[in-house]
Image (cartoon, rainbow over all chains, first blue to last red; front, side, top):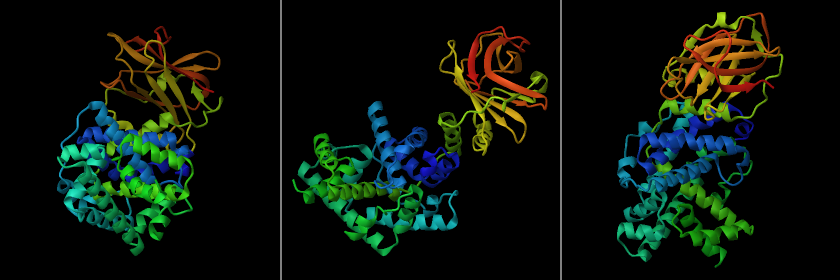
Length: 208
Length: 229
Protein backbone atom coordinates (compact mmCIF):
# COMPACT_ATOMS: atom_id res chain seq x y z
CA UNK A 1 0.00 0.00 0.00
CA UNK A 2 2.89 2.32 0.67
CA UNK A 3 4.16 1.69 -2.85
CA UNK A 4 0.70 2.40 -4.25
CA UNK A 5 0.53 5.63 -2.30
CA UNK A 6 3.92 6.47 -3.80
CA UNK A 7 2.43 6.00 -7.27
CA UNK A 8 3.88 2.62 -8.21
CA UNK A 9 1.70 1.02 -10.93
CA UNK A 10 3.35 -2.37 -10.45
CA UNK A 11 2.24 -2.41 -6.80
CA UNK A 12 -1.27 -1.60 -7.91
CA UNK A 13 -1.18 -4.45 -10.37
CA UNK A 14 -0.03 -6.82 -7.66
CA UNK A 15 -2.77 -5.74 -5.27
CA UNK A 16 -5.37 -6.07 -8.02
CA UNK A 17 -4.26 -9.55 -8.96
CA UNK A 18 -4.50 -10.64 -5.37
CA UNK A 19 -7.86 -9.15 -4.45
CA UNK A 20 -9.79 -8.48 -7.66
CA UNK A 21 -11.64 -11.84 -7.73
CA UNK A 22 -12.90 -11.30 -4.20
CA UNK A 23 -13.88 -7.68 -4.76
CA UNK A 24 -15.51 -8.56 -8.08
CA UNK A 25 -17.42 -11.44 -6.51
CA UNK A 26 -18.71 -9.15 -3.77
CA UNK A 27 -19.80 -6.50 -6.27
CA UNK A 28 -21.48 -9.06 -8.49
CA UNK A 29 -23.28 -10.62 -5.53
CA UNK A 30 -24.70 -7.20 -4.66
CA UNK A 31 -25.59 -5.77 -8.07
CA UNK A 32 -26.36 -9.08 -9.77
CA UNK A 33 -24.82 -8.05 -13.08
CA UNK A 34 -21.39 -9.01 -14.37
CA UNK A 35 -20.76 -5.91 -16.47
CA UNK A 36 -21.84 -3.53 -13.73
CA UNK A 37 -19.73 -5.48 -11.25
CA UNK A 38 -16.69 -5.07 -13.48
CA UNK A 39 -17.26 -1.33 -13.69
CA UNK A 40 -17.59 -1.17 -9.91
CA UNK A 41 -14.43 -3.23 -9.55
CA UNK A 42 -12.61 -0.70 -11.70
CA UNK A 43 -14.09 2.20 -9.74
CA UNK A 44 -13.04 0.67 -6.41
CA UNK A 45 -9.43 0.19 -7.43
CA UNK A 46 -9.27 3.63 -9.02
CA UNK A 47 -10.60 5.14 -5.81
CA UNK A 48 -8.03 3.22 -3.82
CA UNK A 49 -5.31 4.46 -6.16
CA UNK A 50 -6.35 8.06 -5.65
CA UNK A 51 -6.87 7.77 -1.90
CA UNK A 52 -4.04 5.40 -1.06
CA UNK A 53 -2.21 8.07 0.92
CA UNK A 54 -5.16 8.23 3.32
CA UNK A 55 -5.16 4.49 3.95
CA UNK A 56 -4.56 3.61 7.60
CA UNK A 57 -2.83 0.25 7.91
CA UNK A 58 -3.48 0.12 11.64
CA UNK A 59 -7.23 0.34 11.10
CA UNK A 60 -7.85 -2.34 8.51
CA UNK A 61 -6.16 -4.73 6.13
CA UNK A 62 -6.16 -3.92 2.40
CA UNK A 63 -8.70 -6.69 1.87
CA UNK A 64 -11.09 -5.26 4.44
CA UNK A 65 -10.56 -1.75 3.07
CA UNK A 66 -11.28 -2.89 -0.46
CA UNK A 67 -14.33 -4.94 0.46
CA UNK A 68 -15.79 -2.19 2.60
CA UNK A 69 -15.36 0.18 -0.33
CA UNK A 70 -16.75 -2.37 -2.79
CA UNK A 71 -19.83 -3.04 -0.70
CA UNK A 72 -20.47 0.64 -0.16
CA UNK A 73 -20.11 1.55 -3.83
CA UNK A 74 -22.21 -1.40 -4.96
CA UNK A 75 -25.03 -0.51 -2.59
CA UNK A 76 -24.78 3.12 -3.71
CA UNK A 77 -25.17 1.90 -7.26
CA UNK A 78 -28.26 -0.08 -6.35
CA UNK A 79 -29.78 2.90 -4.57
CA UNK A 80 -29.14 5.11 -7.59
CA UNK A 81 -30.75 2.57 -9.84
CA UNK A 82 -33.54 1.97 -7.34
CA UNK A 83 -33.59 -1.63 -8.36
CA UNK A 84 -32.60 -4.58 -6.31
CA UNK A 85 -31.77 -7.95 -7.82
CA UNK A 86 -33.42 -11.02 -6.48
CA UNK A 87 -31.51 -12.39 -3.55
CA UNK A 88 -29.39 -15.22 -4.80
CA UNK A 89 -29.70 -18.31 -2.74
CA UNK A 90 -26.53 -18.86 -0.79
CA UNK A 91 -26.18 -22.23 -2.45
CA UNK A 92 -25.90 -20.49 -5.81
CA UNK A 93 -22.54 -19.18 -4.88
CA UNK A 94 -21.28 -21.26 -1.99
CA UNK A 95 -21.36 -24.75 -3.36
CA UNK A 96 -19.55 -24.53 -6.64
CA UNK A 97 -16.43 -26.50 -7.51
CA UNK A 98 -13.45 -25.56 -5.40
CA UNK A 99 -11.12 -25.20 -8.36
CA UNK A 100 -13.03 -22.10 -9.48
CA UNK A 101 -11.62 -20.22 -6.53
CA UNK A 102 -8.07 -20.46 -7.82
CA UNK A 103 -6.54 -17.28 -9.10
CA UNK A 104 -4.05 -17.80 -11.91
CA UNK A 105 -2.05 -14.75 -10.87
CA UNK A 106 -1.12 -16.16 -7.48
CA UNK A 107 1.69 -18.54 -6.75
CA UNK A 108 0.67 -22.16 -6.09
CA UNK A 109 1.58 -21.76 -2.41
CA UNK A 110 -0.45 -18.59 -2.12
CA UNK A 111 -3.37 -20.18 -3.93
CA UNK A 112 -3.21 -23.14 -1.63
CA UNK A 113 -3.25 -20.94 1.49
CA UNK A 114 -6.04 -18.78 0.15
CA UNK A 115 -8.10 -21.76 -0.96
CA UNK A 116 -7.70 -23.44 2.40
CA UNK A 117 -8.69 -20.31 4.20
CA UNK A 118 -11.65 -19.65 1.93
CA UNK A 119 -12.85 -23.20 2.45
CA UNK A 120 -12.73 -22.76 6.21
CA UNK A 121 -14.49 -19.42 6.10
CA UNK A 122 -17.10 -20.80 3.72
CA UNK A 123 -17.71 -23.68 6.11
CA UNK A 124 -18.01 -21.26 9.02
CA UNK A 125 -20.66 -19.25 7.16
CA UNK A 126 -22.47 -22.24 5.70
CA UNK A 127 -22.73 -23.93 9.08
CA UNK A 128 -24.70 -21.04 10.48
CA UNK A 129 -28.36 -21.60 11.05
CA UNK A 130 -29.95 -20.95 7.61
CA UNK A 131 -32.30 -18.32 9.02
CA UNK A 132 -29.43 -16.50 10.69
CA UNK A 133 -27.34 -16.65 7.55
CA UNK A 134 -30.22 -15.36 5.45
CA UNK A 135 -30.71 -12.39 7.77
CA UNK A 136 -27.00 -11.57 7.70
CA UNK A 137 -26.87 -11.78 3.92
CA UNK A 138 -29.91 -9.53 3.54
CA UNK A 139 -28.21 -6.88 5.64
CA UNK A 140 -24.74 -7.20 4.17
CA UNK A 141 -25.46 -7.73 0.49
CA UNK A 142 -28.67 -5.74 0.19
CA UNK A 143 -27.93 -2.91 2.60
CA UNK A 144 -30.99 -3.56 4.72
CA UNK A 145 -31.47 -2.40 8.26
CA UNK A 146 -32.82 -4.83 10.82
CA UNK A 147 -36.33 -3.45 10.32
CA UNK A 148 -36.06 -3.85 6.54
CA UNK A 149 -34.78 -7.39 6.91
CA UNK A 150 -37.75 -8.17 9.13
CA UNK A 151 -40.14 -6.83 6.51
CA UNK A 152 -38.38 -8.64 3.69
CA UNK A 153 -38.39 -11.97 5.48
CA UNK A 154 -41.82 -11.49 7.03
CA UNK A 155 -40.78 -12.11 10.62
CA UNK A 156 -40.97 -9.91 13.73
CA UNK A 157 -38.21 -7.34 14.24
CA UNK A 158 -37.24 -8.90 17.56
CA UNK A 159 -36.70 -12.23 15.84
CA UNK A 160 -34.45 -10.65 13.24
CA UNK A 161 -32.42 -8.87 15.91
CA UNK A 162 -31.93 -12.17 17.68
CA UNK A 163 -30.97 -13.99 14.49
CA UNK A 164 -28.46 -11.33 13.54
CA UNK A 165 -26.87 -11.17 16.97
CA UNK A 166 -26.65 -14.93 17.36
CA UNK A 167 -25.44 -15.49 13.81
CA UNK A 168 -22.77 -12.83 13.96
CA UNK A 169 -21.60 -13.95 17.39
CA UNK A 170 -21.27 -17.53 16.19
CA UNK A 171 -19.40 -16.38 13.11
CA UNK A 172 -17.04 -14.29 15.21
CA UNK A 173 -16.36 -17.18 17.58
CA UNK A 174 -15.73 -19.60 14.73
CA UNK A 175 -13.38 -17.23 12.96
CA UNK A 176 -11.53 -16.59 16.18
CA UNK A 177 -11.07 -20.32 16.58
CA UNK A 178 -9.77 -20.57 13.02
CA UNK A 179 -7.22 -17.91 13.77
CA UNK A 180 -6.27 -19.60 17.02
CA UNK A 181 -5.63 -22.78 15.08
CA UNK A 182 -3.49 -20.83 12.66
CA UNK A 183 -5.44 -22.09 9.69
CA UNK A 184 -6.84 -18.71 8.96
CA UNK A 185 -3.79 -16.68 9.67
CA UNK A 186 -2.06 -16.94 6.33
CA UNK A 187 -4.18 -14.50 4.40
CA UNK A 188 -4.34 -11.99 7.21
CA UNK A 189 -0.59 -12.07 7.67
CA UNK A 190 -0.09 -11.52 3.97
CA UNK A 191 -2.48 -8.61 4.20
CA UNK A 192 -0.35 -7.11 6.93
CA UNK A 193 2.70 -7.32 4.72
CA UNK A 194 0.76 -5.67 1.92
CA UNK A 195 -0.52 -2.93 4.16
CA UNK A 196 2.85 -2.23 5.72
CA UNK A 197 1.32 -2.53 9.20
CA UNK A 198 3.63 -3.72 11.94
CA UNK A 199 0.80 -4.40 14.38
CA UNK A 200 -1.29 -7.37 13.32
CA UNK A 201 -4.95 -6.46 13.38
CA UNK A 202 -5.72 -10.01 14.38
CA UNK A 203 -4.30 -9.58 17.85
CA UNK A 204 -7.69 -8.73 19.20
CA UNK A 205 -9.24 -11.70 17.47
CA UNK A 206 -6.64 -14.07 18.83
CA UNK A 207 -6.66 -12.68 22.32
CA UNK A 208 -10.40 -12.46 22.82
CA UNK B 1 -24.79 2.16 27.16
CA UNK B 2 -21.63 0.37 28.27
CA UNK B 3 -18.70 -0.49 26.06
CA UNK B 4 -19.54 -4.16 26.54
CA UNK B 5 -22.97 -3.53 25.08
CA UNK B 6 -21.50 -1.52 22.26
CA UNK B 7 -19.20 -4.37 21.25
CA UNK B 8 -22.20 -6.41 20.14
CA UNK B 9 -23.51 -3.48 18.16
CA UNK B 10 -20.29 -3.06 16.20
CA UNK B 11 -20.92 -6.39 14.50
CA UNK B 12 -24.41 -5.27 13.53
CA UNK B 13 -23.02 -1.96 12.33
CA UNK B 14 -20.31 -3.65 10.27
CA UNK B 15 -22.89 -5.49 8.18
CA UNK B 16 -24.93 -2.31 7.85
CA UNK B 17 -27.99 -3.48 9.76
CA UNK B 18 -28.23 -0.66 12.33
CA UNK B 19 -30.48 2.30 11.81
CA UNK B 20 -28.50 5.42 10.78
CA UNK B 21 -29.05 7.08 14.16
CA UNK B 22 -27.73 4.02 16.03
CA UNK B 23 -24.73 3.86 13.75
CA UNK B 24 -24.05 7.54 14.25
CA UNK B 25 -24.11 7.12 18.03
CA UNK B 26 -21.52 4.36 17.80
CA UNK B 27 -19.28 6.41 15.56
CA UNK B 28 -19.52 9.37 17.90
CA UNK B 29 -18.29 7.14 20.70
CA UNK B 30 -15.41 5.94 18.56
CA UNK B 31 -14.53 9.51 17.76
CA UNK B 32 -14.12 10.09 21.48
CA UNK B 33 -11.18 7.72 21.33
CA UNK B 34 -12.31 4.65 23.28
CA UNK B 35 -9.53 2.08 22.57
CA UNK B 36 -11.57 -0.98 23.56
CA UNK B 37 -14.40 -0.04 21.24
CA UNK B 38 -11.98 0.89 18.46
CA UNK B 39 -10.55 -2.63 18.65
CA UNK B 40 -14.02 -4.14 18.68
CA UNK B 41 -15.07 -2.05 15.69
CA UNK B 42 -11.95 -3.05 13.75
CA UNK B 43 -12.58 -6.70 14.54
CA UNK B 44 -16.20 -6.39 13.46
CA UNK B 45 -15.15 -4.87 10.14
CA UNK B 46 -12.66 -7.66 9.56
CA UNK B 47 -15.35 -10.25 10.28
CA UNK B 48 -17.88 -8.58 7.99
CA UNK B 49 -15.28 -8.41 5.24
CA UNK B 50 -14.86 -12.17 5.49
CA UNK B 51 -18.43 -12.76 4.35
CA UNK B 52 -17.59 -12.38 0.63
CA UNK B 53 -14.65 -14.76 1.13
CA UNK B 54 -17.28 -17.43 1.73
CA UNK B 55 -18.64 -16.90 -1.77
CA UNK B 56 -17.16 -18.91 -4.58
CA UNK B 57 -14.90 -16.42 -6.28
CA UNK B 58 -15.50 -15.34 -9.85
CA UNK B 59 -12.80 -13.97 -12.10
CA UNK B 60 -13.35 -10.59 -13.73
CA UNK B 61 -12.44 -10.13 -17.38
CA UNK B 62 -8.71 -9.53 -17.98
CA UNK B 63 -9.62 -6.28 -19.71
CA UNK B 64 -10.54 -4.69 -16.39
CA UNK B 65 -6.93 -4.82 -15.24
CA UNK B 66 -5.64 -3.36 -18.48
CA UNK B 67 -8.21 -0.59 -18.31
CA UNK B 68 -7.22 0.09 -14.72
CA UNK B 69 -3.54 0.36 -15.58
CA UNK B 70 -4.24 2.83 -18.37
CA UNK B 71 -6.53 4.92 -16.21
CA UNK B 72 -4.17 5.14 -13.27
CA UNK B 73 -1.53 6.35 -15.69
CA UNK B 74 -3.71 9.33 -16.48
CA UNK B 75 -4.41 10.01 -12.81
CA UNK B 76 -0.97 9.57 -11.31
CA UNK B 77 1.15 12.53 -10.40
CA UNK B 78 4.70 12.17 -11.53
CA UNK B 79 7.41 14.48 -12.72
CA UNK B 80 6.86 15.87 -16.14
CA UNK B 81 9.66 15.44 -18.67
CA UNK B 82 12.20 18.17 -18.71
CA UNK B 83 12.57 20.53 -21.64
CA UNK B 84 15.36 19.49 -23.89
CA UNK B 85 14.92 15.83 -23.12
CA UNK B 86 11.88 15.76 -25.39
CA UNK B 87 13.62 15.53 -28.69
CA UNK B 88 11.76 16.33 -31.86
CA UNK B 89 12.45 15.22 -35.40
CA UNK B 90 13.02 17.74 -38.16
CA UNK B 91 10.82 15.79 -40.50
CA UNK B 92 8.57 13.84 -38.25
CA UNK B 93 5.79 13.38 -40.77
CA UNK B 94 8.03 11.28 -42.97
CA UNK B 95 8.77 9.00 -40.07
CA UNK B 96 5.29 8.02 -39.07
CA UNK B 97 5.56 4.29 -38.72
CA UNK B 98 1.97 3.46 -38.08
CA UNK B 99 -1.37 5.09 -37.67
CA UNK B 100 -3.85 2.89 -35.97
CA UNK B 101 -7.41 4.03 -35.74
CA UNK B 102 -10.81 2.52 -35.35
CA UNK B 103 -9.46 -0.42 -33.40
CA UNK B 104 -11.13 -1.81 -30.34
CA UNK B 105 -9.51 -0.27 -27.28
CA UNK B 106 -8.52 -3.61 -25.84
CA UNK B 107 -6.19 -4.30 -28.72
CA UNK B 108 -3.72 -1.73 -27.47
CA UNK B 109 -4.30 -1.55 -23.77
CA UNK B 110 -1.62 -4.16 -23.19
CA UNK B 111 0.92 -2.00 -24.99
CA UNK B 112 -0.22 1.03 -23.02
CA UNK B 113 0.39 -0.88 -19.83
CA UNK B 114 3.96 -1.64 -20.89
CA UNK B 115 4.50 2.07 -21.51
CA UNK B 116 3.13 3.31 -18.21
CA UNK B 117 5.23 0.85 -16.25
CA UNK B 118 8.51 1.82 -17.91
CA UNK B 119 11.04 2.69 -15.22
CA UNK B 120 11.95 6.08 -16.72
CA UNK B 121 8.53 7.09 -17.92
CA UNK B 122 8.23 10.39 -19.76
CA UNK B 123 5.05 11.75 -21.21
CA UNK B 124 3.02 14.85 -21.96
CA UNK B 125 -0.65 15.27 -21.13
CA UNK B 126 -3.11 16.56 -23.69
CA UNK B 127 -6.17 18.44 -22.46
CA UNK B 128 -9.33 19.10 -24.45
CA UNK B 129 -9.75 22.62 -25.82
CA UNK B 130 -12.98 24.58 -26.22
CA UNK B 131 -14.47 22.46 -29.05
CA UNK B 132 -14.35 19.33 -26.89
CA UNK B 133 -13.25 19.95 -23.31
CA UNK B 134 -14.07 16.36 -22.31
CA UNK B 135 -11.35 15.00 -24.60
CA UNK B 136 -7.95 14.11 -23.24
CA UNK B 137 -4.85 12.25 -24.23
CA UNK B 138 -1.27 11.43 -23.46
CA UNK B 139 1.89 11.01 -25.48
CA UNK B 140 4.51 8.58 -24.18
CA UNK B 141 8.12 8.47 -25.20
CA UNK B 142 9.16 4.86 -25.65
CA UNK B 143 12.91 5.28 -25.49
CA UNK B 144 13.54 1.58 -25.82
CA UNK B 145 11.95 1.44 -29.25
CA UNK B 146 12.49 5.10 -30.16
CA UNK B 147 8.82 5.73 -30.70
CA UNK B 148 6.15 8.16 -29.64
CA UNK B 149 2.89 6.56 -28.54
CA UNK B 150 -0.06 8.94 -28.46
CA UNK B 151 -3.37 7.92 -26.88
CA UNK B 152 -6.55 9.92 -27.29
CA UNK B 153 -9.76 9.46 -25.33
CA UNK B 154 -13.34 10.70 -25.34
CA UNK B 155 -13.02 12.63 -28.56
CA UNK B 156 -15.94 13.49 -30.79
CA UNK B 157 -15.92 12.05 -34.31
CA UNK B 158 -14.23 14.52 -36.68
CA UNK B 159 -16.60 16.46 -38.92
CA UNK B 160 -17.32 14.94 -42.35
CA UNK B 161 -14.38 15.33 -44.71
CA UNK B 162 -11.98 15.91 -41.84
CA UNK B 163 -9.51 13.94 -39.74
CA UNK B 164 -7.64 14.75 -36.61
CA UNK B 165 -3.97 15.60 -37.02
CA UNK B 166 -1.24 15.46 -34.42
CA UNK B 167 1.29 18.28 -34.17
CA UNK B 168 4.50 18.86 -32.31
CA UNK B 169 5.49 22.46 -31.70
CA UNK B 170 9.17 23.12 -31.30
CA UNK B 171 10.77 25.60 -28.97
CA UNK B 172 11.29 27.80 -32.03
CA UNK B 173 7.57 27.71 -32.85
CA UNK B 174 7.74 25.29 -35.76
CA UNK B 175 4.65 23.11 -36.12
CA UNK B 176 5.56 19.65 -37.29
CA UNK B 177 2.88 17.17 -38.38
CA UNK B 178 2.78 13.87 -36.52
CA UNK B 179 0.12 12.05 -38.52
CA UNK B 180 -3.62 11.92 -38.96
CA UNK B 181 -6.12 9.71 -37.21
CA UNK B 182 -9.79 8.98 -36.73
CA UNK B 183 -11.41 7.78 -33.52
CA UNK B 184 -13.33 4.63 -32.80
CA UNK B 185 -16.94 4.44 -31.68
CA UNK B 186 -15.84 5.26 -28.13
CA UNK B 187 -13.92 8.34 -29.17
CA UNK B 188 -10.54 6.69 -28.64
CA UNK B 189 -7.52 6.39 -30.91
CA UNK B 190 -3.82 5.66 -30.85
CA UNK B 191 -1.00 6.97 -32.98
CA UNK B 192 2.53 5.54 -33.10
CA UNK B 193 5.39 7.56 -34.54
CA UNK B 194 9.06 6.83 -34.91
CA UNK B 195 11.57 9.19 -33.35
CA UNK B 196 14.41 9.94 -35.79
CA UNK B 197 17.94 10.60 -34.65
CA UNK B 198 18.05 14.27 -35.69
CA UNK B 199 15.56 15.33 -33.10
CA UNK B 200 15.23 18.70 -31.44
CA UNK B 201 13.45 20.04 -28.40
CA UNK B 202 9.71 20.53 -28.42
CA UNK B 203 7.56 22.85 -26.35
CA UNK B 204 4.08 21.48 -26.90
CA UNK B 205 1.92 18.90 -28.62
CA UNK B 206 -1.50 19.50 -30.12
CA UNK B 207 -4.28 17.95 -32.16
CA UNK B 208 -6.28 19.91 -34.74
CA UNK B 209 -9.06 18.92 -37.12
CA UNK B 210 -7.88 19.14 -40.71
CA UNK B 211 -9.10 18.02 -44.09
CA UNK B 212 -8.87 14.29 -44.66
CA UNK B 213 -5.33 13.19 -45.39
CA UNK B 214 -3.78 15.94 -43.32
CA UNK B 215 -2.05 19.21 -44.10
CA UNK B 216 1.51 20.51 -43.86
CA UNK B 217 0.55 23.64 -41.94
CA UNK B 218 -2.20 23.52 -39.30
CA UNK B 219 -5.32 25.44 -40.22
CA UNK B 220 -8.07 23.76 -38.18
CA UNK B 221 -9.25 24.35 -34.64
CA UNK B 222 -7.14 23.06 -31.78
CA UNK B 223 -8.88 20.08 -30.18
CA UNK B 224 -6.21 18.95 -27.72
CA UNK B 225 -3.19 20.77 -26.37
CA UNK B 226 -0.40 19.89 -23.96
CA UNK B 227 2.65 21.88 -23.01
CA UNK B 228 5.96 20.34 -22.06
CA UNK B 229 7.18 21.69 -18.74
